Amino acid sequence: MAEYILPLERLIEQFRKLPGIGKKTAVRLAFAVLDFTNEEAETFADAVRGAKELVRTCSVCQNISDGDICHICGDSERDHSVICVVEDAKAVMSLEKVKEYDGVYHVLHGAISPMEGIGPDKLRIRELIARLSDGTVDEIIIATNPTVEGEATAMYLTKLIKPLGVKVSRLAYGIPVGGELEYADEVTLMRAIEGRRTM
Image 1 (cartoon, one colour):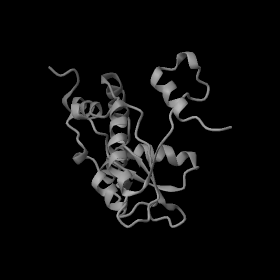
Image 2 (image 1 turned 135 degrees about the horizontal axis):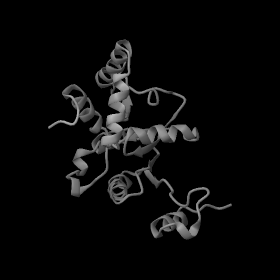
Image 3 (image 1 turned 120 degrees about the vertical axis):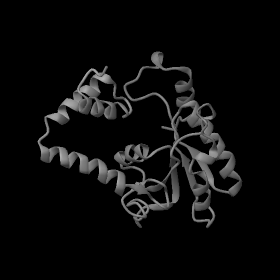
């Protein structure tokens, strides 16, 4: 037997499909939607529908876009000879906040994970290799996550790209600012040592 009346139960279940949303949060969100005016509810529904219908992938870098080419790939001021490879569009947004990188991106839409049935063929690797064919790219910066899957993807890409004569570098990972060495794990410490730079 349903805990709530059917229309509310259906709304709660839809919110529970979102990542990181548990039962309590889903209930809270569903009741928040019930407090919307009809106009607010329509605007909310239109925003969901519009995002689903209008957001697509950039034909060049595979990032999210509302046109055939995203605003980053379409920017002639950016350095198109350097491509930063990331797992998802959220990583692009995070890197863009720093405002230090002026190259372009390539979004893989995941990482190699045999346990989840994700092989290289399920990622946008073919599109990345196609971008290297005209000889205009000098460097690939691999910025996959510092996880087992991210490392496996980085190693796979390195083996694939190095023979093409393109420089491959890996984003340095290490101790966060404000972090203490005694609380860092071995992998983080190893990455911090590998990514050290001259002062």
